[in-house]
Image (cartoon, rainbow, N blue to C red; front, side, top):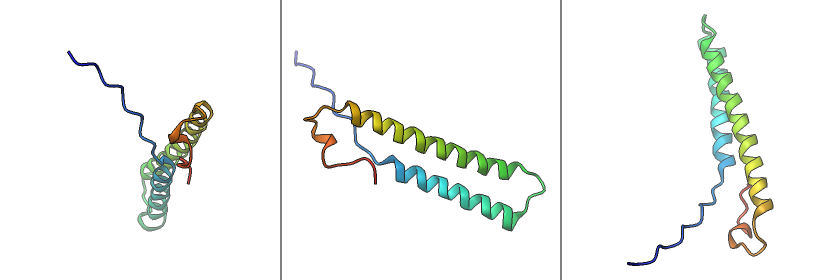
Amino acid sequence: MSERQPDPLPLRTRDTPTILTGTVLWVIAMVVVLLVVRPADPRPVWVCVAGIGLGLFGLWFVRRRDARLDETAPAGDETAGSESRHP
């Protein structure tokens, strides 16, 4: 039987721009709902507020995660070098 190959390294992604884009889209949706649609029912506004809040939470969470990963990365790790996770 053959030996098991080692697990691949995790992908290094840039999550901050993706989360910021989604949050900005929720802000735009809220402006459209408030200025153009002007709903009698407040639920669409609260959906937008929830999207913005979750986007801000995701941004905080990802940045905290990235900071922890950068602290625990070994000094000789080639993935932690020139490729920064932050824009």
